[in-house]
Amino acid sequence: MNQAIQFTSLEKQLLQLISEKPTPLPELSQILLLEETQIKELLEHFKHLGIAYTITQNDDYFLPCFFDRIDIHQLKQNLNHLKLELFYFDCIDSTNLFLKQAYFKSPITCCLSEMQTQGRGRFGRPWCSPYGLNIYHSMRLSIKLPPNQLKGLSLVVALALCEAIEEMGITTKLEIKWPNDLIIAEQKLAGILIELIELTADACQVIIGTGLNVNSLPQDMPDVEQAWTSLYQLTGTPIAREQLIVRITNKILTFISIYQQTGLKSLKTAWIARDYLFNRTIEVLQGTQPIAGIAQGIDAQGRLILKDKDNQLHFLESGEVSIKK
Ligand code: BTN
Image: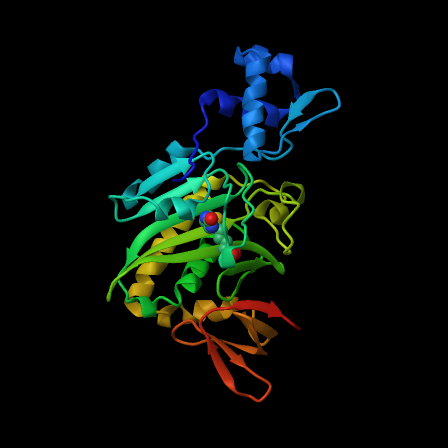
C-alpha cells in the first residue's frame, strides 16, 4: 500500500512559520494555539519524514530553504480542460508507484507530491525528493501504439519538457542526453522514468514520471553525486511551480499525440537540435557489457546509433551512457 500523506492545516502553518524565520517554541505555541509538547510532536513527525529543519543555537526552529507549497486549487483550475484526475500529496513513497498500485476511472491520471520518500530513477536508483522545492510529477495514460513502437517515448517526453521549461523564459539551451536526461549548462536538470504497465497488441498503459529540479539549492540535496542544477540555481530566482506543472502536463499530452500520429518523424529536427551526445565518444553499459564508440544520433525508432572503432554501427534500445571525451 502507498503511504500517501496530506498535512493538516496546522502542520502546513507550522512549516510556513519555521520557513519564514528561525522561531522559538513559545512563539510557535502562541501563534498556533498548541501546547509546546504538541508542536514538538508535529516537528518530530516532520523529522521522521526527512524534512530537514534545523534547531539554531538559540533553540529556534528553522526550515532553511525556499518554501512555497503548490497552490492546488489554481492548478486544478488550469488543468480543468484536460478532464484528468489529479492527486496531490504532501508526502508519498513515489508518485509513479502510486499510479501503479491503484485503479483509476479517468483516462488520464496525474499524481504530484511535495516530497517522495522512495522516489526512484532508472535502474532503481534513488531520486532525491526534498519537500516543497521541486516537481515530482507522474501521469498514467493509455497510448494507442503497440509496445514495440514505444521505444522513443522517453525522447518524446524529454522534448515536451524542454519546451515547457523554455516557455517559462529559460534562455539557456536545454539538451537531452539519450534516453531520458535533461541537461542544461552541462548539469542534470531533470530525469524521466517511464514504466509500461498494461500491454495489448495495439495499446499500452504507461506511467510517465518526471523529476525536475526547480527551487533546490546545493545544501538541499547534498547527497546527490551526479552533477546537477535547478532552475533557481540557473536564474537566481525561485520559480512558482504551478504554471510550470500545467505546461509540463499539456506539453506531454501534445507531444504524445504527435507521436501517436507520426512516430518520431516530425520530432526528428527538434531532437537533433537537442542531442547532447551527438559526436561524443561514449560508453554504453547494457547489463555488464560496455560498448564504446561515437554517438551518431538516433534512428526512426529512437534507438541510439553508436559507431565503434571498427566503424560498425550498433543500434541500442537501452543502457547507461557515460561520456569519455
Ligand atoms: C532518472 O533520471 O533516472 C529518472 C528520474 C525520475 C524521477 C521521477 S520523480 C517523479 C516520479 N516518481 C518516481 O519515483 N520517479 C519519477
